[in-house]
Amino acid sequence: MNEKLIAIAIRIFGLAEGDVTMDSTPADTANWDSLHHIRLILETEEEFDIELDEDDITGIVDMKTLAATVTKHQS
Amino acid sequence: MRNPYVAGKHCYLRHPTQEDADGPWHEWLSDEETTRYLNLRYLPNSLEGQNEFYQSMRNSGDRLVLSIVDIATEKHIGVCNLSSINWVHRYADLAVIIGDKEFRAGPYVVEATSLLLRVAFKRINLRLIKSDYVKTNESSEIIHRLFKFKKTGQIDDIFWDRDRYVPSVQMALRREDWLRRQPPEAATEQAAEG
Image 1 (cartoon, rainbow over the protein chains, first blue to last red):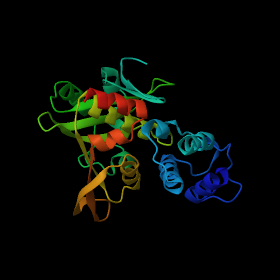
Image 2 (cartoon, chains in turn red, blue; image 1 turned 120 degrees about the vertical axis):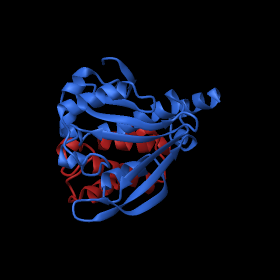
Image 3 (cartoon, rainbow over the protein chains, first blue to last red; image 1 turned 135 degrees about the horizontal axis):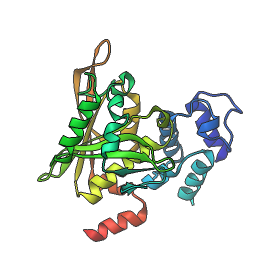
Image 4 (tube, chains in turn purple, orange; image 1 turned 90 degrees about the horizontal axis):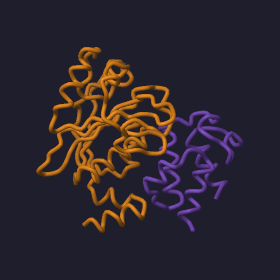
C-alpha cells in the first residue's frame, strides 16, 4: 500500500522517484500545497475505492496519516 | 479559543469582532489574487467599507458571517459565510475565503468548509447548500469535488476572468448526501434526531 501511495503522491506533485517517502510532509515536499493536497486525497479515494468521511479528510496532514486513514478503511 | 462557535483540529469559526473588522480583513477583499474569482469584489475595499459591512452583517437576518481563526496562533486568517439564507425552504449559499496567504497551503480551507457545512446542516438545520465557482478556478472546483457537491447547472460566458468571459458552474449539496460523509457516530446521532 505504501508504494502505491508514494506513486500517487509523486504523480500528483509532479516529482521524481525518491522525492516522496512515507515520512514526507507538506513542509518538506515540493508542490504540496492545498490544491495538490486535495488532489492527493481524491486520487487516493479512487485508487483504493474507499470513501473518506470528513473527520478522515481533515485528519490527513502528511503521508503517515494518509496511510493510517487508508488502512482504517481497508480493515 | 475565544468564543468558538464550531471548532476543528486546526481552526475554529467564531462571530467576527470589531478587532477583526479593524484588521487585515479589508485588505483581503482588495487583493487581486484573493478576489479574482469573487462575483462582487471587483472594486477596492477599505477599512471604512469593511466596518460598514461589519455593522450591517450584525443585523442581517439572512446572512451568517463567521471569522476563521487559526487555533495555534489565535490569528484571524479568513472569513466564511452562509448568505441568502432562506428560512422557509431552508437553503443558503456558501463561501469560504482564506485571506491570509500564509495559511493557504495548510488544511484550513478544507477544515473551514467542513465546519461551515456542519453549522449549516446541524446547527441551523438547513437542507441544501448552493454554491458556484468560475470554471477556470481549479481550487474551487476541486473543493466542491472533495465535499461531493453535485453540478446543477452552468451559465456560459458570464464571468470576466482577466481577458475573456468564462462559465460559472452551479453546484449543490443536499443534507442527506452530506450526512453520508460524516463519521459513523455523527451520522447515527443525526439519524436518531430524525
